[in-house]
Length: 455
Ligand code: GDP
Ligand code: GDP
Image (cartoon, rainbow, N blue to C red; front, side, top):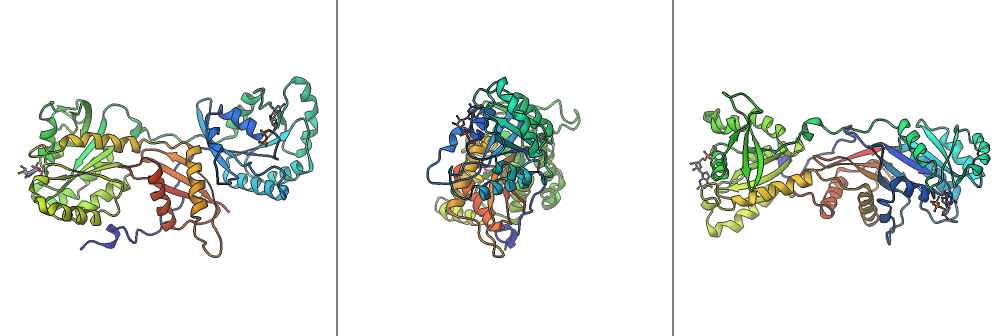
């Protein structure tokens, strides 16, 4: 009998905010018609702005990926309500509050031709409370002459007003330089994972499942080459193997060949060596014995791969031993056991006969492609707006949590951050993950959804 934790129930609440690095966020705030969209499009080089025309869903926040001087940040356009809608004051305060709660830098845009209005002053008053840097931009300043009018904007109490023309681009570069200066450093990718060269594969599975046979089968036509860069000549660790026209690095082949600790197989399987191989690799091919029921150990290793944030392919080996008339029942059994891993591709192979072994490389490639995936922020928020409009998060403690916007903080594996105004239940996060996988290709990779709750 398998413990409940391996059967998809009782996974408990996922941790909030695991501290994964997030791209810095710039929020653009200001009254309607001051020129925010024009400026945003200018900053984006109009790369993503197209997604804004969405039917059906009213949204009041749109997030985009932006890039300036080689640095990435998320641009949050908090505008977008109907011009002339009543309650502008309230709407704009809400905008400022969202910006203060979630952004790293706030850009207040005022109309340089009109000067500061009472609404601008009210927003500025709110923003002066912010512990984040606030930069004041006066837009529609298309030429030198218009700059004369700006001195009156000092009384907003946000420091120097920076003239810019969203329409012509005048001053926008200087403005972005200031924005980036005020921003925290962008997150760096994990150096280990960015290492170039062949993709790294861990081949794991319990003793006698057929790991060596598969390796032989794979290297049968090509030659397996001991990787000169790893280990020593007496203890080669990794092998370079050509599979399907591509070179892969199989990590810890020494462990496979020497059959370390075969006598105490269970221990070996669950050993640190397996764990180390999984962590050294980008993708794990987990071999299961199709002629036997799936074991708790097998599921544990699959969980280990997912927890380590690595891509995973399941190879059901010894498929030649499974009776034709037992196959359907077996697949059903498997699916029950693997409920926690609906995202993993399964292939049925025989390392002995070579059956379907050629399907392995394409499955590995797909999983790695998805593991590497970056979902553009515009598309992500488009998706989020649709999902939340159709199925809002459940009320908790009498409050309806609001999801403000989302960004992808990292890839390898794809890691998403939801900025919310309240706690999201684990069930709703799992729902979001399911929906995310329906929309974006993420087969073969675990994904992580973190929540940053701001009040
Ligand atoms: P938003 O409502 O704040 O997003 O403002 P928009 O970007 O939609 O701009 C409102 C109007 O101001 C539009 O007619 C724009 O063409 C115009 N506008 C925006 N930026 C500039 C600018 O830099 N110079 C001039 N002359 N007009 C601008
Ligand atoms: P390892 O301990 O995981 O490296 O497993 P081996 O590759 O040494 O295989 C253990 C035994 O299973 C050997 O006798 C293999 O011939 C046999 N074996 C491996 N793959 C298959 C397969 O696909 N079908 C069958 N029938 N036997 C297999």
